[in-house]
Image (cartoon, rainbow, N blue to C red; front, top):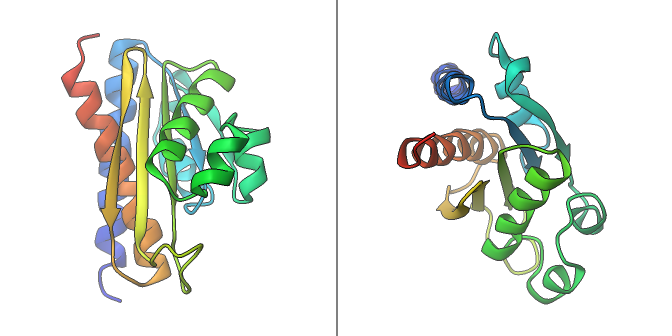
Length: 169
């Protein structure tokens, strides 16, 4: 696929934008990832100066870890499954609280190659939780495991950038 270089540049610029904005605001960030498996955290820590803003993150690939590590209510997980907007919101807030950060950023979805729990490949939820609430965005990213995961990272960073722009420091 020829787009992988562009994807890397896009991820880097999106990560740099949020890291620098958070540093200006003296605010911190935590991540909680499912389908992206650490690539969101990796994109963030690639940016120089990140230690001033990044508290840490969780990779909670297994559904039960979403409850035990990230604090998602177990009844929510059993009722809705891991690929759900309310679960995404709970992941972001759980990461924010458990890592002691101002902002939490989360990803959950189906990267493929097979559908999961009746949810189609490419269905992804990205969520941000901040000091004054949060937002969840549903994405339909098509197919191709690497494509879905890379786009989920970019879209999570975009969502955070939009929330930062919408809130005064």
